Image 1 (tube, rainbow, N blue to C red):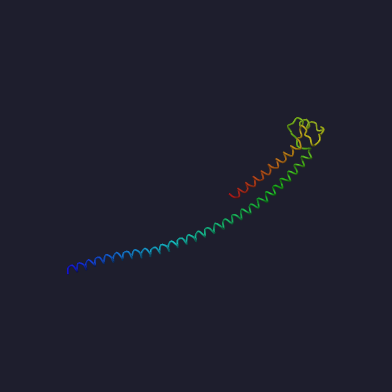
Image 2: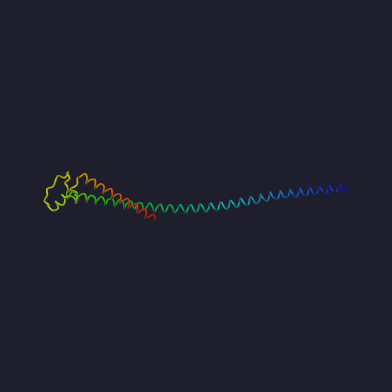
Length: 170
């Protein structure tokens, strides 16, 4: 009988140990499952909140960018108008300058010996307009100087326009 009681006690201890182990496994699994659902829900809420904030920030940045783009476009149009007006003024000045050169008999080299003599003797005879005298420069050189001055004025206008644009963007 003792052996039967010992076996029953042994069976009970084994059953109890197995039941405890099974309970621990079931409890651990269910706890993990419940906390995993909670963690996933919490993570999804945080990600959703971050997406909402990011979309709001993106919308604000887009509105600011469009406003700056509109301002830059308006300024570009203003600068373009000023540049066109300035180019027209330069063209008028160059036309006036060309007229003055034609009326005065062409461009002269003030450092030439003939020019100094001509200033002393205003009644000196003039040579044909296509040829250069010692003091007058040739028509080809005159055209070259005028075209280079026009290019220099255009470069200065372009540089001024760029400078105005950069100062506005600062």
